[in-house]
Amino acid sequence: MTPRTAAAAPFAVLGLGCAIAGGLASAVIAPQPTPHGAWAVAYLVLVGGIAQLGLGVGQALLAPALPSRRLVAAQVAAWNLGNAVVLGGTLSGVTPVVDVGGAVLVVGLALLVLGVRGSSPDGRTRWVRHGFQALVVLLLVSIPVGLVLARIGPT
Image (cartoon, rainbow, N blue to C red; front, top):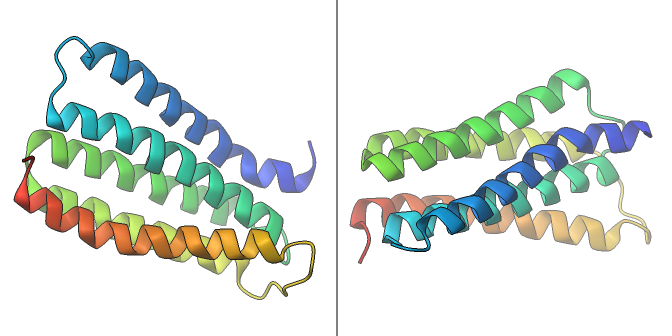
């Protein structure tokens, strides 16, 4: 395993785990789907799974120097703790908990942006950089939208 692969591995493993958990949750709720259940499935797959994978691989490819294990551990912890708190708060209907989870997710994104800071664009990574930046912006816009939707509740 190359050092860059090792830097992306925790994100890839946990992202894949979230996507699988979303699939399993979908199978469990299929006989009697609920709005919160369907939301949780989508959240696990898209935010916990695919977004996490994209963030980790993007950082591994773009970081000018390999991020330290400590930084990667903080990023992975913030992202996954934030997701767990958002899921728990939403499913239990406690919106202040969802707010805390959203704040932790923003911290995780800030740590990920910090990990790629100083990288110089080149032809090889230009599209990776654009994809990484687009994902970060999408998530930064989605977090407050999700916090508002948590207050409105399922329709």
